[in-house]
Figure 1 (cartoon, rainbow, N blue to C red):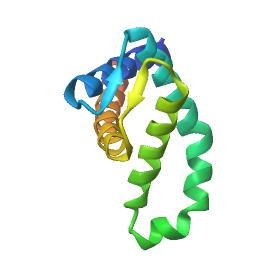
Figure 2: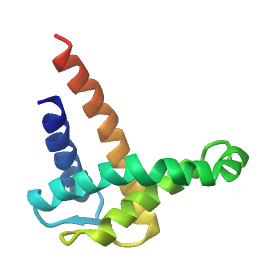
Figure 3: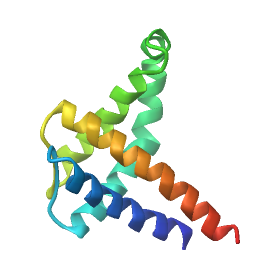
Figure 4: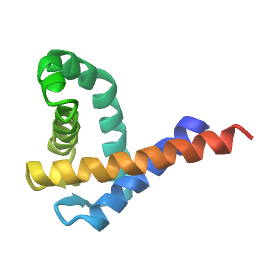
Length: 116
């Protein structure tokens, strides 16, 4: 139940990103749900590998390169899914930042809800 609620809230957060930032477009809630699923899978499978491969650059930039990796995951998800579009790298960077902030708020809220 917790996983399904988090997934639905992250899909809503993706719609919020599209509403707040014009460089990100989501056509429907179904597209947002699929995009949230694909983003979760990319962040679970591909992101750790990219972080490991770019560890020297990440250390050299004091962790700021992780923002680039997040933007690449966001952009890759938009490239795979119909109904979810990102207009360039800057839009992917801003969109991933907003989405990550929403994700942190959602994680805290879901944890507090289910720990009662």
